[in-house]
Structures are given as C-alpha cells and as structure tokens.
Length: 297
Image 1 (cartoon, helix red, strand yellow):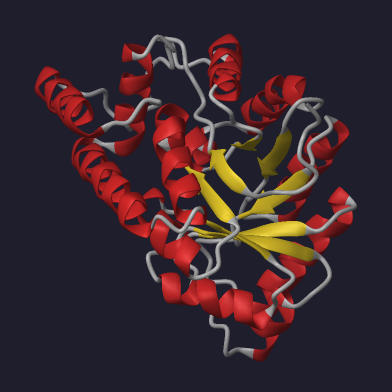
Image 2 (tube, helix red, strand yellow):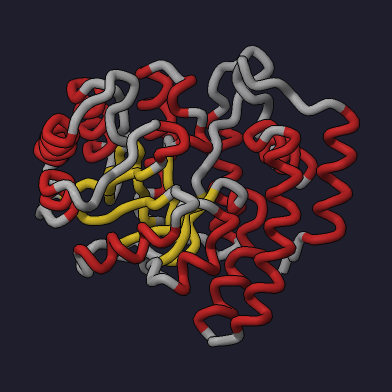
C-alpha cells in the first residue's frame, strides 16, 4: 500500500520516549510508530508539543527527526520545527526536508510579543529554507499568540502561497471554520482531541492528537462513524474519549500518556523534568477510567 500524498484523517502526535537518565530512546519511539501503523496510522506529527519539543536540545530535536525518517517511505511525516528564532526553525526545517519529511509545521514565535509583520516573515523565511509551504501550528493556550483573522497582515499570511495548512489546537472551534472560510485551499487539522467531532462538523480535514498515541482505534472509530453520518454514535464515543482526557489532564497529560503506553507494552519511559511521573493513586485512577471508556478495536 502506498503512503498518502497529503495530510488528512487521524494523525498521532508522536511522543518522545526517554530512558531513566532522560536521554532520548529512539528505539522505543520506532516501536511506538510501528505499533500505530499496525493499527492503521498512515501519518505522523513528529517533534510537537506531545514530543516535549521545547524541553529538547536542538541536537535532540534533530535526533528525533532522524529516527522518525525511517518511516518516510511508508508514512506521511510532518516535522514540527517551531522555535523563537527564525534561524533555529530554519535549521530544523532543512534537517527534516533532507531526511525525507513530507511537510513542515511551526508554532509562531513566542515570548517576546512579536507582531503580525514579524510573524508573517517568520513563516515566510521558514518556507524558503524548507523549499515548501509550512503548516501554522495554532496553539494560543501554550504560545500566548492569538491570530486575529481581522488583521490585514494575518489575513495575508493565511492566504499566502507559503502556508499549506493549520493545526488548530484551539478550543475556539469557531475560528477553525473561519480559517477554512478565509482560505478554502488550506488543510485544517483539529488539534484538541476532545473537540474532534466539533472540528469535523466545522470542516476539519482530520485531527492531530496526543492521545492518539494509545487511543488510535478509538479515535479512528469516531472519525469513521462521523464520515458515515452516524453522528450520535460518534458523539457517544467522543464523550468516552473526553472522560479519559479529563482524567489525563487532571493527573498530567504527558506523564499519563507515557504511563498508559508502558501499560500497553510500549515503554515510553519517563517525562522530562520538570514534568513529574504519576503517583500510584494517579496510575490507578488512569487505569480505571481507561477500563470504563476506552475502545480498543
């Protein structure tokens, strides 16, 4: 079976496994990706928030790209290259493209309060370095950067030829529809697992999610039910998924994902500090909610 030629559907945002000393465990990462492929995954989002990207050194981020590139002939690979500086993001973009990644994504530059013109040039220069259009990773809850679609420079950014899509990790799903309306050519992927049904209803081309690392069959079932117009069944499974997500966020999303993967036989190791591993009580709570809500086939 040939790999997809574009981004769509259910896409795991792959985590970065670590050894006990916090070094990157690329072998565990490859086992995880292989497992996801056996479940039907055809796309991967590499080096994003779920991968603890901003807790990795530059060399570690490129190490993760190099490991994932072993799947470049079998799966559609997106590399997240976001950074505060253009120069750093360009280095990651060139690395990913050289390794055979199909697409590049980037969070907007954060911390310094960059304005629309600076953000516009940031994406333009990343695209120039990559030699291909870029996906905007819209995650205002973490970056603190909200895109004002009424701003003429921001509007020009979303309509530019050097942007091919948006990863919309924003609880305001109304904005997802407005982005699609602004530029129907964009591939817009829902980025919050818990709003997947809402995103699909408002025109999303698919979803990129952190819990897809261990919940791929569950979310694939939601997606397929929705496309089959079986909306009530899709919503019922979304509610179950949200029961799980609610608990994971309460105990710590990244540590919980890694713990669940270890229970399922994929040792993703520990989260990188300052994240903390789950307590026994948190582990017990997580397993209980999974037992009650998770669909595995």
